[in-house]
Picture (cartoon, rainbow, N blue to C red):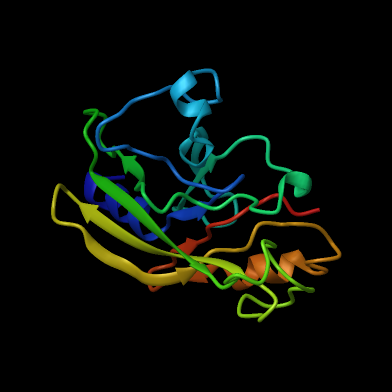
Length: 201
């Protein structure tokens, strides 16, 4: 496959899944190890990139799947604030198509939080959540995805898309798979993009 074709495949077929809630973080002026073994990253789990996977998509020949996990040790009993993406960081995946250790494609996510709790509660939700726009879901996140190709400027690929809410248990979210599916978007060219918790039982 030529460099151009590989670049196109990587760009138009990126399937992004936040396994435990995230994407690769490239902080602007700091470096630290992952998996909580370094003091700096242990203090900031929302930007702790625990794993990055890249592989040929088994269900879509010619496409590449990227999976980037952040925020280790998530569990439904971790509330009431659960596991938001950082809004003061940029999450990035750099793709090198020709082996020169320089990115040919860069995907960049920026997250926003909509806190609807006001002064009435500290809870994440105040009743069962059955849709991403359910009034019972009090903390919501969305993201912007930008992409840069061949060292060019970043251009918007997704102006705004919803993040799947943290999975807080069956009583609060009786059909989490439905919420996850609603947060998975498909773009022209075959991109499928998801941000949120990925483990569904």
